[in-house]
Amino acid sequence: MSDELYPASRLGDAAAAAGRAGLDALLLTPGPDLRYVVGYDAHALERLTCLAVPAEGDPFLVVPRLELPAAQASPAGGLGLELVPWDETDDPYALVARRLGGTAAVGLSDRMWALMVLRFRAALPSARQELASAALGPLRARKSAAEIAALREAGQAIDRVHAQVPGWLLAGRTEAQVAADIAEAIIAEGHSRADFTIVASGPNAASPHHAASDRILRAGDAVVVDIGGTMPTGYCSDCTRTYVIGSPPADFLVYYQVLKDAQDAACAAVRPGASAESIDAAAREPITEAGYGEFFVHRTGHGIGLESHEDPYIVAGNVTRLSQGHAFSIEPGIYPGPHGARIEDIVVCTDTGVERLNLVTRELVEVPA
Ligand code: ZN
Ligand code: ZN
Ligand code: ZN
Image (tube, rainbow, N blue to C red; front, side, top):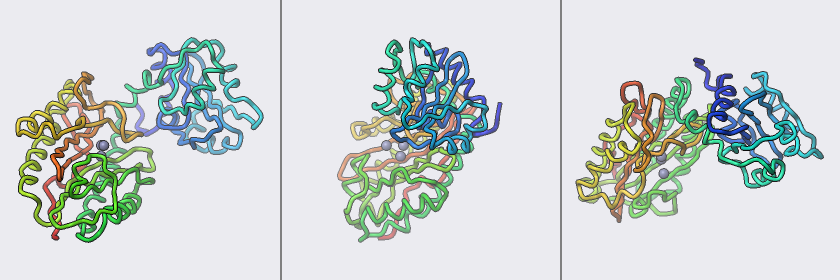
């Protein structure tokens, strides 16, 4: 067991997983799969960069010659992995096909561009194309100790941003102005990128994926603030808190308490052996019992790691059993209109129960109007 974030053992693990999934090779273009396997955070461009991981045989990384120095300087350069540069007039797809030889099935990274999927189909006409997640999904879903540490660091960074939000939620400012303050703080607190800054005030709080608009904040507003970014490690944060400016509507206070209890109940249900759907049910039952079931219109959560949404999804019908290392959000919401609320933490399934990675208060924060 390595305590590195991107251990050298991943290449062998990926090859073995490809074999178990019935794939002859994985073809991974820039994105989270490539970064997971060899630590290379490559630019996604039209020129082909592709890590080929045969189930049997040696892996190789095809790179445009002008990006060879960047690939060598990345963790991928230290793995003893063969780097295969191609020149501007070469056909890199034919190059991959030639080196792979005859293949019956390839797993393509889920986020590969259609441009590349179709070129690979032409270059490997006899190979069935499947998703690389068939092999890599289960590996990526269960985090190592180093990955959990990276997610914990991301959680602490976004908690520090939330701690500053009440100071920006002033009546008279717009959602967009608050979102700009938040985006700046996401970087200042250690992320390399702000991924989303949802500031949904008043009636907009009833729209779970409202972004941020020119609406002016007013006394009496509830404001859903759902924010996240990507850390230099590659690992993501995602945390939602709901704030109120001055005194909120009376019915809001009633369902906020229901929501908070439901979020606690779902967190408390996390332990090895529990199914993903049982966590969704643990959040949904108390909300339904209190009469707000029809206003909880989305799944309870999603996995998180190198992507802010990945396996395992916490939703009815997902019978996946949780085990140590699964990391995901627990984010029930109630959106009756003309206001709404959501509370979201990232949690990790431990060997005995659960660890929350977001610790900023879940008590309703009332900002003076
Ligand atoms: Zn969402
Ligand atoms: Zn979120
Ligand atoms: Zn989320």
